[in-house]
Amino acid sequence: MTILIVLLGLLASHFLPSIRRWRQYDWLLWPMGRITGSPAAPGWAAPMTLLLVAVIVALIAGALFTALLGRVGWIVPALAAFLYTLGPRDLDRDVSALLEQPQHADGREAATALGVRPDQSAPQAASAVLYAACTRWFAVVFWFAVLGVAGVLAYRLCHRAMQSDSISAEALDGLARLRWVLEWPVLVLMVVTAGLCADLDRVYQAWRRHAGQRPAWLIDPRMLGLVAEALMADAVEIPVGVRRGHQLAWRMLVLWLVVMSLLLLAGWLV
Figure (spheres, rainbow, N blue to C red):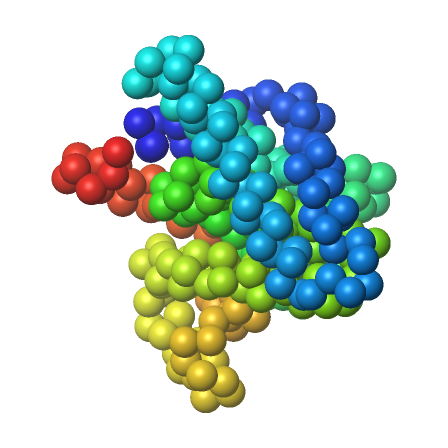
């Protein structure tokens, strides 16, 4: 059922863009704001509150729909949570707006959302698209497959909370640590997948350069920049980097879905 929910969620999110308006997270972030509003609140209070909110919401939703619909009732909150935490913006639409209307307001808004700037090189633009794919697709798919509703809520709430202007420096540091923990396995798998979908030797050389600068296991979003530079060094213009980064992200996502299907057939994934 996991792979089916992922496929349905990805399709619905893409073809029903109006879903985006329902992706409001302030009500789930309210407990964190109340607890961390005090200057005396320790840095670990923010991530712990988010984790507790994610677990409690997942347990309540699962118990409620299982009581109403029986053993298959968990499918309803699972699909709803997956749809709720995707994005919140659609990657394909942002890339299309940036490439087709770069001077239009929609194109500039899409560029800002993707993290693409005019002063970047083409590989840097590709890296920004890959990281956007990480936060919008891959992290959600991974944590949904591993921890279900609680996993995707924890990741999205952490990601969203770090964008708040009212958060304290201590809380921001605690959330940054939680986000690194949540993104680390996703980035590792993305790097491996990029090698399988593009050029494994170039990706390995990029990892070697990374390992020469910091501990080999300490992978963060900068690793995607090294991968993009290795795979797209011949790209000159930003639109080319954006397009190639988007195409690579799609190939990687398809490979993830194929592997999840094989895990389902092998009985390792529900």
